[in-house]
Length: 64
Image (cartoon, rainbow, N blue to C red; front, side, top):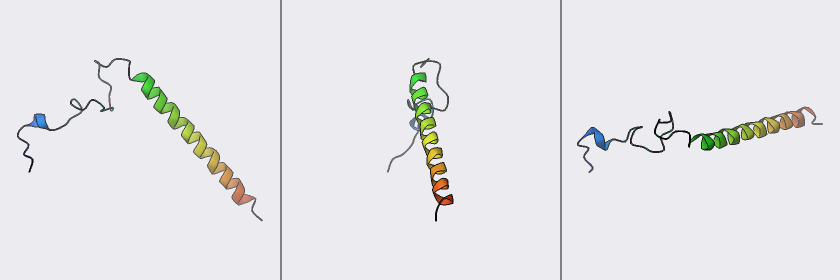
């Protein structure tokens, strides 16, 4: 059984390098291109979902 002796053994936002809620000052602007890529990917995914939803709605309305 693992025993936690101090709070330093518990992972927090300061000890996890991939924690993304707020960028740290030491990382600077190097995370922004990655974030822009993720945002762009999500926007294109949302547009594709909306286009599919509209297509399905048209198919439903035009059924015999």
